Amino acid sequence: MIKDGYKFAAAPLLTGIVALVFHWNWAGGVLIFLGIFVLFFFRDPERKPPTDPQTIVSPADGRVMEIVEEPRGAKPGRRISVFLSIFDVHVNRSPVAGRITAIEYRTGKFYAAMRGRASAENEQNAFYVQSDRGEVVFKQIAGWIARRIVCWKSVGDSVIRGERVGMIRFGSRMDIWLPEGAEILVRPGQHVAGGTSVLARWK
Image 1 (cartoon, rainbow, N blue to C red):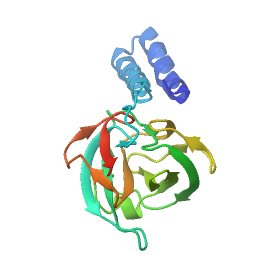
Image 2: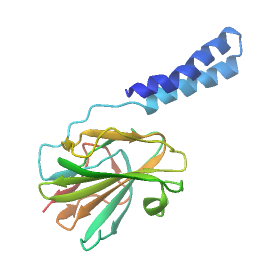
Image 3: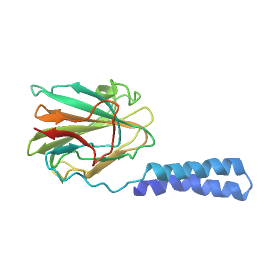
Image 4: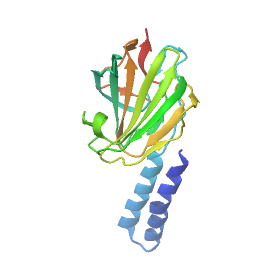
């Protein structure tokens, strides 16, 4: 459980209990349900990445929305977009081991996270990780509901595959850009789990 969950859940739970004491049963029930859902949303299960060091894992739980060709400057590569519903775990993880060379936060729009233009136009926080096989970029992207991106890492930090790097509060999106030397192993529509599901493999 992420500790912020207790902070956000306390108000509706306590207010709901007070409402029940005064026999405002309907309001009390709704508030307590809301508090329990907040605790559910902030859950943080342990994850064990695959042992094969050549694998690249998903940075988030959710559904693969699209896989598109997308160069970064002169470097050819592909982008995988994962949509997180409000029912998915929202803790984000590093897909590869390496060193964080840059973190770029950018303000933007709040289009629905499942829309393709969200990758380019929505508020986002990008991690640039230099792995032993090349640079990998992955982004936390805010959506229509999600309005708070949380980052737990700094430039210069080393990360291991599957390590927690932050979270996005409520429905959102994560993109991962991989260079040409990675073989994509997932398909659109597939559900993935952060830190354990293999998205790709270094050739």
